[in-house]
Image 1 (cartoon, helix red, strand yellow):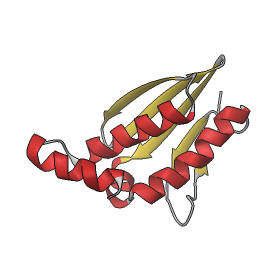
Image 2 (spheres, rainbow, N blue to C red):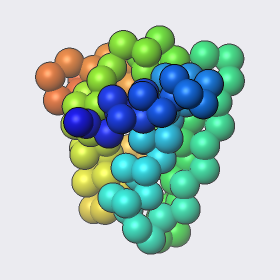
Image 3 (cartoon, one colour):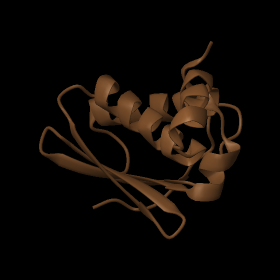
Image 4 (cartoon, rainbow, N blue to C red):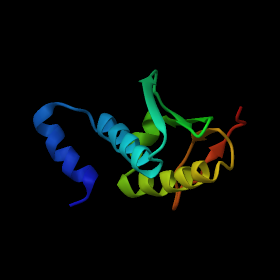
Length: 113
């Protein structure tokens, strides 16, 4: 059984939303994929932001709520695999907003700072 399905079963007894479970999954993937990073989360107004500090650099990863509703665990794992790899290399933009996930994640990337 995949992790998201397992968490969904637990959700049924605890009253936690599927979106919250997916946000927890993202936090877990980021924390384990970038062990030296500090990861913060903020959600509201239909947007979920993950703020990552690693080796003196800061990154912002944003997901629209309706995207999180539509994606599955494989989509999340594939998209975050790309993000974790870029952060480990300290390459690419520091602000990433996922507008669509198809195949291994099509990302609309904004300018970082």
